[in-house]
Image 1: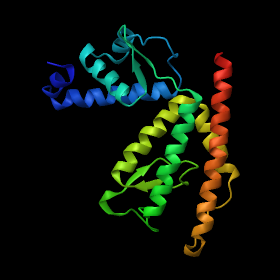
Image 2: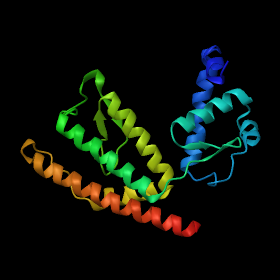
Image 3: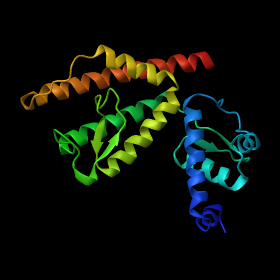
Length: 207
């Protein structure tokens, strides 16, 4: 029986624990707490969280599926690493999602598009209120955004704050839809430039 199958037979509380462990480790990954290419100390993690091997392994495997950890051939897990081309692709895919959502008009003025609406975190791509999208878009956007957070590191939050401060007010009237799209495109361009510059600087420091 695989570990996944075994977990499915465990009580609901154990699966909740696995999710909580994955969420906590995920935030520590985003904070740059674990060094690239250095295997995670699973014994230390288990001791830190006061948990057993099975739920911890399940949490780490979840993070592998999320592309935030890499399973090593010789055993154990490392922080996933991204090259510049990976970051460029992630930014491009995020922009494709934003453009597709805009064309489909999933997010109408004044509120959520019914029960199918899921909010993706606000960023210079999507504006201060976030992007309200259908579930498949939300799942893809959140996954890509998490990979971007890991690849760029803590500098991403500072970039987003700077972009929010330097951009002008968002056109709001219905007749200004073209201006809104121009505004979003310019925000995305500025964000892309700063993200790639931050990634290059971080890579140079590690070299």
